[in-house]
Image 1 (cartoon, each protein chain N blue to C red):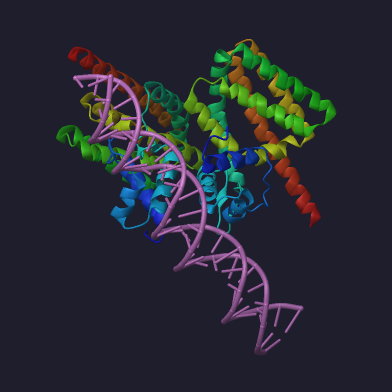
Image 2 (image 1 turned 180 degrees about the vertical axis):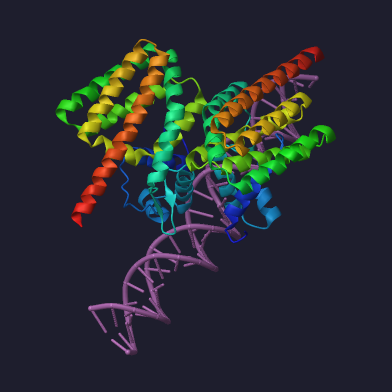
Length: 221
Length: 221
DNA sequence: TGATCACAAACTGTATACTGTTATTCTGCC
DNA sequence: GGCAGAATAACAGTATACAGTTTGTGATCA
């Protein structure tokens, strides 16, 4: 695991932290600060951060690296990409998933269902992550998988915001249950259709939350 | 133009050279060599090459950087991505293209048609590049455009090989003429359908050339 | 009090040097 | 001549140093 060079290790470290939402929009990542914290020189940190920036996980400014600020337009553009790619990927995954992968997804969805009662958003988030990563791992087309993962990373903040909403929570879990069912039956067509609906619902949730946020801002004025 | 830092300039320089096919599969790019050639230190060259590698333009080895070696499987996977994304992009472009862009595409296709007689593969290549870049520039969805550009760069070698084939040459030009016609009429549905056919034809050309190469290899033994 | 300028601090970009690792060449042996 | 093994060269990775640039900050003056 740690049998790699500093740059790769730091890169992976920060990538997972970004994916888990541990880096806030206000955080400024500066190579020299991180370097002294980790007890290494600037260079490996700098290279790791620059790679994360070139992959869209971060945004390089004149004063350190920050999370990229997504415009409404960009977010809507990502939803188009999701509609085009993810149904096909899910259909492939339904055909190719292994029994072991199905078991993992079963577990994850069971966890997600329980969070409807308990309200444990953190567990819901982790379970969703596992479910998604597992079915994506079952996609035999590696380039398709990589492309999806690449842009998914960039809308992480939107996903986190959506998951905190009770109504969206229910919609997402319902989608996961249906998808799991399709994967279990190796129903490629069903999985593709359901994932398309899933993306459309996510888009609706995003737009609804956005309207709500704008309304509350208007009310404050 | 040159009002940037060394890293960015070197990065752009090598990216265009790779896109134009000026870097061969045998070339080994080593930062120290390039650095002394350009009269700068290793670091900006190293960072430029590593960014190109992280974007898939190059492959980092234990001994310098080389063009990535695409497996047959990877190439087929890219064709799936093209089928999923490019028809939608072309449909959007047909709706959004400007008159100026149409004029540029008109010019490019006229050039491409002439190369059918003259056999000027280099001009054909440049004209195709202009045609593709122009209609992609007309795609209003920036994220979709970026995603397409990203993987297109990686199958550059396949495109170059295909263009050298007479039969593929004719098929490609026919496709460009039809697409131009759709763009001129702002026929989104037609452009999407025609681009899907275009990708399928490209896939067939690739497979045909691959079989031919394998046959000639067998005959040599 | 507010604007302007200068200065300091904080970062980025680049250079240079050193270290460890891996391919390549050389050497002797069979 | 062919094959181990050692020596060597070539290269990646990291550290340190410094220069250039941008941003914040405080002093000075109207």
